[in-house]
Length: 143
Image (cartoon, rainbow, N blue to C red; front, side, top):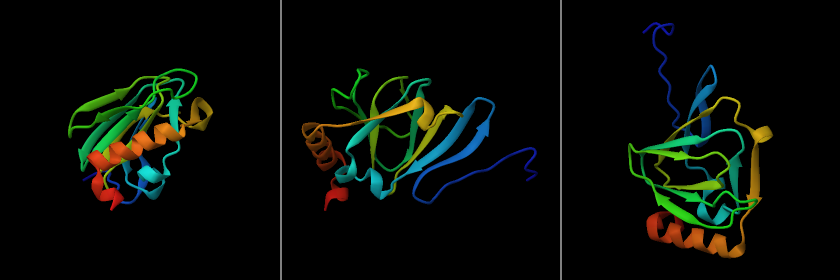
């Protein structure tokens, strides 16, 4: 197929990979990587200028929402369903748990990066809650 007519993209490696940038938006794929293993999650991020859309395309995933205060003050789990659109609103602290076979499509502003995003450490109690969520929803990661 002529690439001027149709662009076909995929990402089957680990982690986050932007695939298409156009105008003001970007489409990326997020796959499991060791840095987002539940035992390695010690912070959440938020984007100050944009919402961020997540769509689970395969595997299992739990979005972890931390509120929108000056720091992540809660741990709200949202089990993702394949094909549903989950829009994390601007300024909302979040992180994600993924099964090793998961793939999540992400749509965000093209300029979303460290300059307009923030990170906050989570408390020991919040980390324990995330580990409990992983045991409940993704036990294969903790065996």
